[in-house]
Length: 574
Image (cartoon, rainbow, N blue to C red; front, side):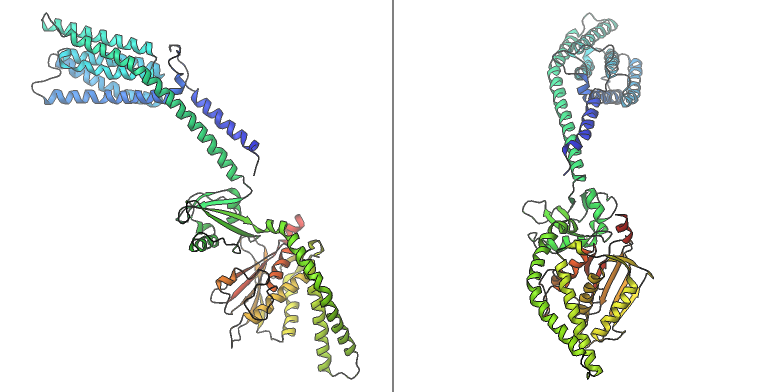
């Protein structure tokens, strides 16, 4: 896992961006000093603009509603004394609110300037509407309570009290003019005084509420910054983990995948929301198999190949829903090539010790048989058939000794003698030898190739033993009873990575799915008389040469054993 120091620059940059966002609002020259009762305006910027937007919506709705009342009610409740002034004021008030939408979106000029100007327009417009409707008896003067109270959320307490005083004086003045215009000696000054006092009460009451809202918003903003920092840190850690992980939902759609897993499964970045089957059908099959086993069974022997066929991957599944079953699933992808590097020494050392303990017991009888066959071959009166039999004994004795040496070398990779060989030419010689030994004709074992020249880098003795095991298994188990199905050896290159590959194909009964996942385990065999070491040794020999041996069922019936070689050019570069 990468050090947290590597993530500190990203974390610091996120904090710097958050602090710049909070302090980006410039202070206007006319803004009042911050008191101990009001937090910095920068911490409540969004709240202030939201309040201004809501008050502007009030300005849009009030004139529309008043005009509806003006034209529909009879007798008129509003605009009855000065109808022309009422209509002009309502239209102007609505147009001002409509024009204010753009200034609020652009947030220009400064919110303090907008608040002061808007409050002045509100006081003037509502005072004229009240005057044209007959004074405070119309009840329109109470509309000033909302703009004045809203201004207390945006400006400081002293400035808000000044706005309340100006509004109260304006209501008293319009009531005085309304009284003079009506020619009566008594006016509803008590209502004007009550509304003015109400505006002062609302202003004083809103100040603590506004302060609490600012403090709450500041805490929420700080939590957002902390959550953003934590999310960025988590994303950095997940993407740079050495372990390959991905998360899929219950619809088998990828919700999270780090760079290592995407490189392993697809070779390119994989976007969240991609179906798992589009990235790796094999992994989707293994996930379905795991789910069918009630979520409590680990696929210890199931594996898949990377996208370029370079290595085997062991998946591990964990249900993210408590109690297991359904829901998202976390998948760990473990590169068995890296694990094999760490385990190979101890595992093959044990195999080497086992082989060494029996080498003496095997070599001595084999040496005695080979020596006896050589002495028998020197007899002067042997028939050609007898000489052929002695040659077979001698060759197979040498082959047994070679097999013992190769098993001993499994625990000593440094002793692998790799050579660059032309695969197709080497196969011609191998197939000829195998046909002669197994006494089969060319129709039973043949070679097809899609590349005329195919260079690989491998230990020829290892490749010989590996191919001999595969061909013997195909000859013994890869044909149906009473059938003359042929065994095919196919060469070519992997389409995605252009790596050389070799396949042994048969048309036999195939391998049952439960056994197919265990055929490379040591001492596992489903047939009679087998030791269960043939395919295990074959895969170990492939790993000694940086190659990969895998099994696949053949379409239409049968089996495919594919050997993917390391790229010779890549070996030379390294």
